[in-house]
Image (cartoon, rainbow, N blue to C red; front, side, top):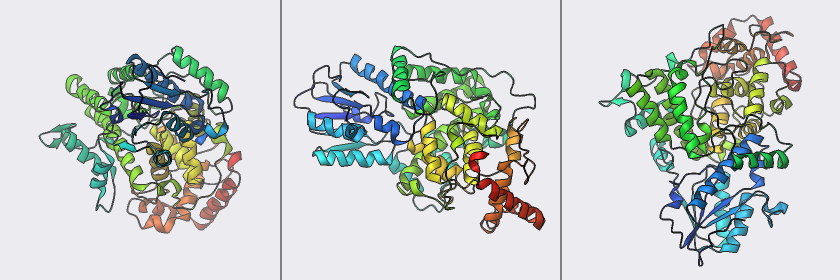
Amino acid sequence: MTTSPAMPRPLRRLVLVLGDQLWLGNPALAGFDPAQDAVLMIEAPGEAAQVWSHQARIAVFLSAMRHFRQTLQQRRWPLRYVALDEPGFERPDLAALTQRLARVLGELRPQALWVCEPGEWRLQQDIGAVAGAAGVPLRCFDDTHFLCSRPRFARWAAGRKEWRMEHFYREMRREHGVLMAGGEPLGGQWNFDAENRKGYPKAGPGWIPAPARFEPDAITQEVIALVRSRFADHPGDLASFAWPVTPAQAREALRHFVAERLELFGVWQDAMWTDTPFGWHSLLSVALNLHLIDPREVIAAAEAAHHERGLPLASVEGFIRQVLGWREFVRGVYWMDMPGMKSANHYNHRRALPRWYWTGQTHMACMRDVIGQTLKHGYAHHIQRLMVTGQFALLAEIDPRQVADWYLAVYVDAVEWVELPNVAGMALFANGGRFTSKPYVASGQYIDRMSDHCRGCRYQPALRAGAEACPVTTLYWNFLDRHEAALHAHPRTALMVRHLGRMDPAERQAVRDHAALLLGRLDAL
């Protein structure tokens, strides 16, 4: 257990630094006095088992935490670091982070516990309960990493009938002066989505400059060995692990993306292709969500690339919208709607998650490729998550809680504040459209248009029923059939069900029958 330099006695303030808050600008560290205060960091095996976490997800958190430990040690700040297999903490009843926190509070008896607000409602509640039980005053700070605080988002949302990211994003652009010219959006429009929805050419994506990679140093190699040993039964592998785990690496990843990949990010951001796991994407979500890099720095670098190098505004705006718009928006939604969001189930879907979500062993080429790369890298881009694994789960009537737990488990950038709204709200419509205007569903022909996955697949995206029909297509039409009245009443989905109305009764019944067959044997698809 790392305790050097010696713990101050009495201990004025113990600052708990969580695994996704790894930056020296952490507001709980403000005014830190090494003569009176100490930092506490806790590796907890229970956090890795809260969901069946991908080995790479466990490794990226542990490695980043241990590198931050090194930073604090170099500053000679008093630090209590409870390692995963810390002697004296082996008992099963000391596996959870809060159980370990309670133990340390009892030992050190600080006058106060300071922490930056956690990225998960469960942890926020549990830390408060532990501090209360220990009789230690708790002070929880707004997370200043984000450009929009929780109270600021609540003020924006107050009185609005609809929460829409686009409206929020425009307000953030104005408030922070991003891509603005004289009070108006640069280029005369707020959104360049229409230019950013292309699929790759039929011949394929061509050459794509590789994203920045970071070969594991001694600390990361030690973590990888530990994870392989301790969590051998967890999904995924670590052979390709090359994620940034320090602020310096995060800045290099940003520099490389802006220099080599941002220019064509926009136009191809929705495109998919077999064995092309990263496309033109930034892969900065891991570094951002662990607070290894400030979103302001990311936004400024992208904006400067347009002003100084003439990078296309559509690409720059599309990227900034993900950081300043969607990322900030879903965090605000998460905290406004928890804990109810966790159990939301608008369609009352109850089916079990197919086993092949954990193996990739399915006959559907799109699912096989996306899940395969997820297991290999712990990564898939937003369209793969939304329109492949996500929309299939919606169409197949999978229990939203099981789906959300899967997403939280398998992606290295998953923290609940960002994962749950994207899954429950965006992919599954489980909250009934709280912040989305419609369910995001499409037939297999959308996947065919945006990728090469349907070439050579045993299923045909244009067929609605029969042994060769694409399950995505069959279940899409079945979804429209089941929810025809509700979809017809909404202007953004009325067109879809009008197409349904043109089907003759026999074909419509054939779709229902084939969908029932598929839903009864999801594990075999």
